[in-house]
Image 1 (cartoon, rainbow over the protein chains, first blue to last red):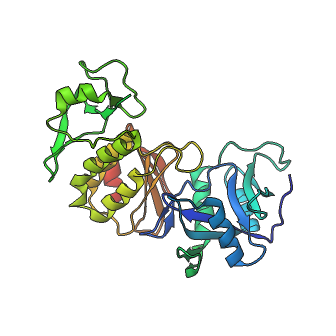
Image 2: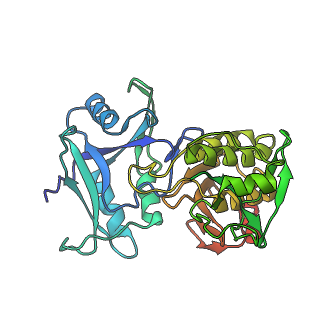
Image 3: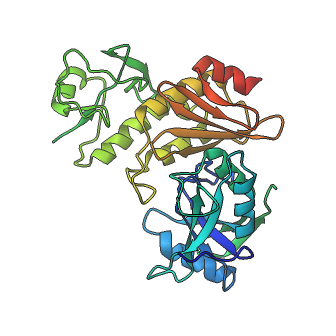
Length: 149
Length: 188
């Protein structure tokens, strides 16, 4: 595994049904998996959005927004939890996305045992820390919503 | 295999209401085997063969002729939501969108919207009314409906609707509530 640096920012594609456009809010279970897909913000927001659209879009799925968060913020939320979670963001390059990575929650600081899932409470804290980019069908940014934390 | 849908309350198949389209809408609260139903019901969708359904209930229910189980699932959910469309149009439209999500909608193994969860939500919202102006609706990976809203303390609350109760999670509370308790909770 190759963990990326704390200062990096990663973005998650937000699309229906996980994204409710009427309230511009993400499902509270969006970060409960132990391998949540994200893309690294390495070459600017347009490139990030382009990668995310290529990764997830098809006839039925369209990217409606992007949630941005720094790796250090994810780690901080995990360590502040009553039962500590040791988050890392692992580089996971795919054929179509050289900036792809996964958010991985570990049981201990040794990072040798992956948690099966992340609680919804912790997922909600990550969501509230996201900076949101609302995008149109072409991937242009229509609105920016700063995080609530 | 051809399919139609049957669900029931209290162990017997029953109609729940009649929509403006004059079609019977079935209650999706609980799924039991009807005493006359064939034994090989696929409980994942609470289905029976349409031939049996047609013989017994063809006059009160219409499902379009389609080879796709998913399309039939959506038709029934859409019919069930007709009664909500007039009262809560924005919520019902979002529910229709969620009802279109098929098994595997997350790219993994997520289930489509469950009838039990939809039934529990319907009973809840008809009793609770529009208690917040920022209600968001989602699916979890088991096909249960999740509702989120901001309470008077500006906390984001989420509620997950199961047949056995409603999971509520806020900054101050986490637990399973009955329908009546959940209605009191959102109005407090």
